[in-house]
Length: 189
Image 1: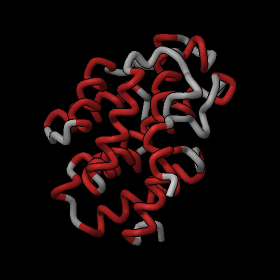
Image 2: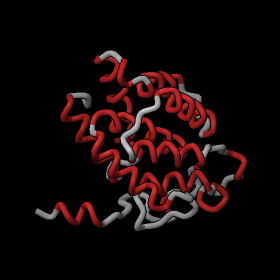
Image 3: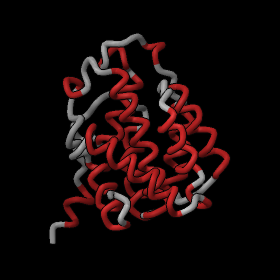
Image 4: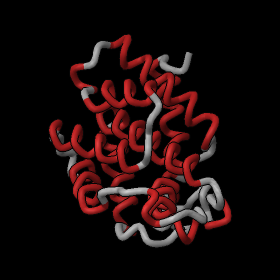
């Protein structure tokens, strides 16, 4: 009944201000990377929604400020982009390829798929966000090759991301949709 409001209004649910991410640099970097992985799954599974959400992320594509009228994903990227302002961390700590990110979000928004570019950007994100966990690297391999990944491996990757995101950003606007997708596909158990 009120679906038109959800399409018109963009609002962060979890990461609404700089205080919500203060002093947690690696936790925010981990959560940001998990968001990218989950969003890539949704890109393949619910393409229309992912394209619409990518358009919302691109509204503030400079990723320079945390805004309460931006989506949570955008605010996470902004926090990683400005660690000295939001995370009380040195700027050189994270190296995120923002020009490639804009291109990637535009591709998602236009429903385009470039497997080689996806692999490259996820490797750059993994290195730039200091992701050293072996399990997250395995999930990345499954997620970037989602179309050719076996169903049991898809379930494993989605279930692990579901658990990680459940603990770090439960009511996040994107994670809420990812949780619903996982429940619908039976990936949450």
